[in-house]
Image 1 (cartoon, rainbow, N blue to C red):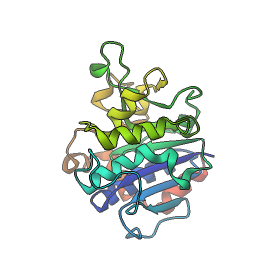
Image 2 (spheres, rainbow, N blue to C red):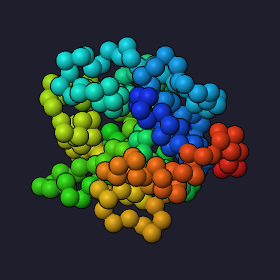
Image 3 (tube, rainbow, N blue to C red):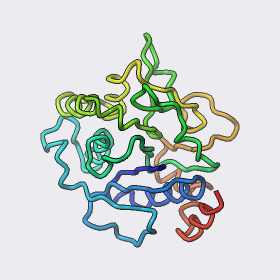
Amino acid sequence: MKHAVYSGNAAVYVDMEMAAKSLVANSDVDAVHFLIDDAKFPRELPDIVTCHDVRGQRFFPKNSANIRTTFSYMSLMRAALALMPEFADLDVILSMDCDTVCVQDVSDIWDMPVDGCYFSASSEPVRCRNGLLYCNTGVALYNLAMLRDGKAEEVVHALNVQKFPNIEQDAFSYLCQGRIHDMPNGYNGTKWTGKHPVSPKIIHYASVPASVWRSYAEPHEYGGMTWEEALERHESM
């Protein structure tokens, strides 16, 4: 089964839907999960999407080192995916930022070779120094089965006691060395992941102000797409 997850608060719900529609329209994903900061999503969603209210989450207390805003704990929740009962039956899950847009068929992203690895994500060359493989986890395929060997608890603990500039991305990159698959950067088209193919499969607007990228052609296309249209394309994948 191919599952994907997005997380965020009300400030990014519109972007979350846009990103998820692009994934549904351009892959054979079986289920999409929204980790949200509300009892109920403010708009009707199709059956392929399940919302999880994580306001009562138990992994990151209020004094956790990296909780600065509501949105930051939503980001932190991605470090706890392997420990959440909602995903106990899953071996892998694709985690996506809400500022990503799938523009080609990405059905093969779940086939990344993560056996023996904690996750697969595209490396950031400028941060890969002194043997460190540092990855951008805005698009990441997590090996939940392997993370349950104790690594997930280690990452969560580190995030609770030590401040990281890039929150869970730093923690996963630093603590999973030697067990990371470097995903081809065409699946994470951002300036941080280096020179990209002519047509990346996934565009990631990291570091571009939302007020700017929301008006770009691809977000505008999928933001204006109805769920019915996205699902119709999905059925043909």
